[in-house]
Image (tube, rainbow, N blue to C red; front, side, top):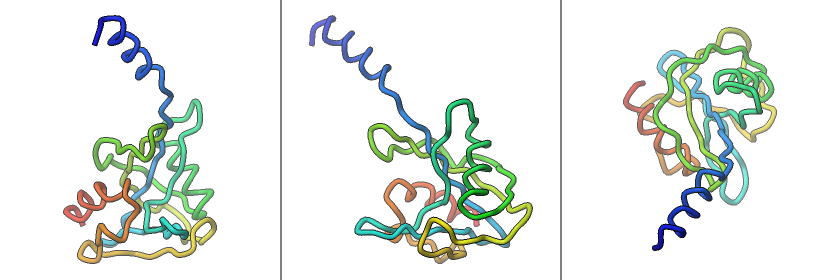
Length: 139
């Protein structure tokens, strides 16, 4: 490709806005809380959502879990590099612990606590699967 073509592609890829999405792996007593997203492409996922302008990943995780599950949490370490959901979205998953509250089902069809041995990747949404692998080894 010409230098002009290479320059165009570099500018195009740099100018793409990629929205950060945070997932939260709530861990308690060696188990992780998962939320089931219904639908034809449904499956288990780490609850969370999009980072709003001006928010850090941690602030977004706290807000999203408060909105979705009515929980107060403390966010911990990242479970690794981001994973593309679609071209415009990249998922990052963080460990967290519950500080206050009991999970309330609001946006998903089911909530479930999984022990490490129960984590089967095929039951999870595709973008969450790499994080399931990492988490399984930590539980």
